[in-house]
Image (tube, rainbow, N blue to C red; front, side):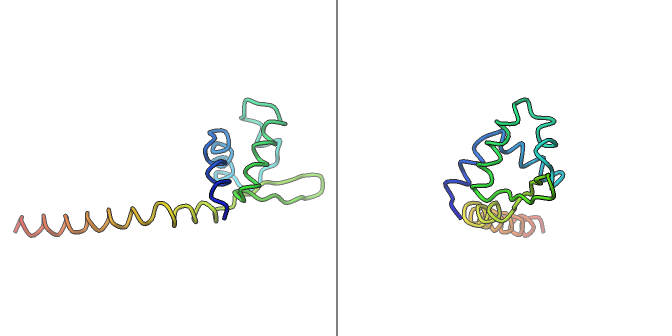
Length: 106
């Protein structure tokens, strides 16, 4: 995984919105993705290109259509590397606090 490409792709609100749309309904065409975007098809295509370079989406051609699919693997890798390790210690602290409070209330 290329962290720089993934973080660059996620840094833009338009690209996050495109990912949200694909998460809601995977396999959309460019036309479908452009429907609620306030920009030209060319601009949406550029954003999709950056998402594809970051491996956050993949495309499949079906006849004349090109469908876009979200790829959750890079997002999971970001979670595993950057978020999970902080989450574990916090959950451990909350677990210990819960048990301590339960002991005090007896």
